Length: 592
Image (cartoon, rainbow, N blue to C red; front, side, top):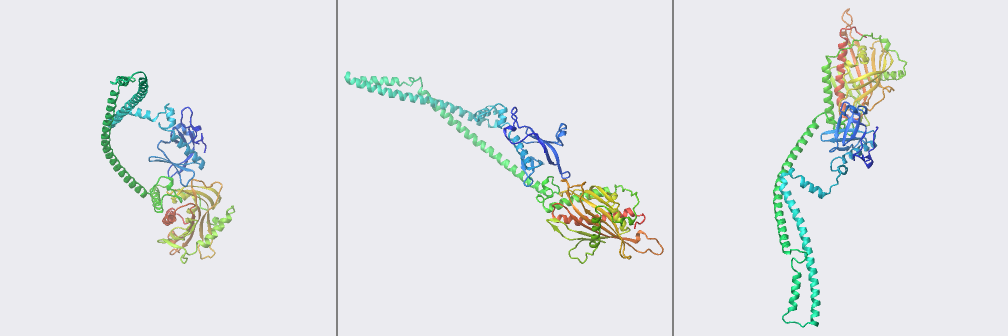
């Protein structure tokens, strides 16, 4: 993943001119939807906004989506070390980095942009040229926001009055304190002077009985202690003002208490209404979540196939069944519109399919053919390991339960009898890729990777996704063979075997889970003699079909779901295919 800047969360990530974090961009995998899964997108983090583009070259055409990070919630995934989710209200982005280190860098960058956004952050205050103190901010609020809060105007007015009274009271206290200090100094000096004069009178002047000297001292003292004599302070006036100020404070406090009681009643009613609203919203949320759990479709990757999936087995099966039903309806609608491809090239004679090839897989093909002829045609009636799971007319489906490392590997075996077609015809339409898309409804696309011989090819095909299961692909060798009977009374056997191989031109990818298969379609033609000299017609032929399948799904899915789907889909497949062969061969010469 390429990135345009580092994201350590330090001051180096801040633009010194604007005070904002630097732009940060790179490639992340974004969950698109359950069909396309994870897709690489060019993601840009700039100005507290996360935007994504289909690629870096397409930025000039505009972003495909963006999120404002002010109220975003970033959640690292519990199990996936490369994944993190960003949610804003109901919008959720599921993102994956290429490794845990890149995921951490993205998370730190996003958190840095969120921390540096908004007016209240320190960098924002620096950008606006102001570092307001709490006092100045409160003063500015009380002086500028009165009109915005008309209901609270009287209370703020009273509080402002109390601040004014407080300032006046503080000044008065300072003035009175100075006055008291001055009075104390004067009294101390006067007492000292009076003591000195008395001592002098005792030696120089006889004491007068009328106390004249004492009266003179008193006059001096009280003349000095005149209320307006010290710094011109009106002690009586200051006392009256002090009393009035304290009375104003007490009165204002009474008004504030009354207002607060009234406001408390009002706010209590609002609180009760909000609590009731919250209760209703919570009930609606719980109801919506319960409805969501009942639905078969979930949008996020947490509900994908896997051991940590949030969807349980019952919901998984319901979702798979709903998707299969949807695909069946689409197939039925398209069935009448399909244009069958005419088979123009002649079919090679049967002997051409009896020859063992000389290609590099020839020995493997011969080994698989012999194994199927030996074991697949054995009767399962007396084998207790095989369980009969479906019986519809001539068709019977058996299953043997096998698990390996928690993965279901149940072998399946089906027997069927189809009138009016030969074993050669059934195997021909099953093997020839020109007709594959006519009868196979589970394939999304396929291509022939290599043609080994006239009767052996290597095919790569992807199957339609059945959500919430992951999409599967398979690479296999498909060979058609005619096996001559060792006894002249026994019919010849036609066989198509498909088994997984590896090839450099079709390596596994992260988009699909690679499944492994070993499948065989084994057919024998039984002919009943026609009446008289009549020629053999399709009314005289019957094809016995044995179909075996060993499939390793290659991923994780609930065992009960896999078995239920197999039980449902295999009979439908056999009916659909054999009906198709009957329609294609009707009115045409018999191909033995």
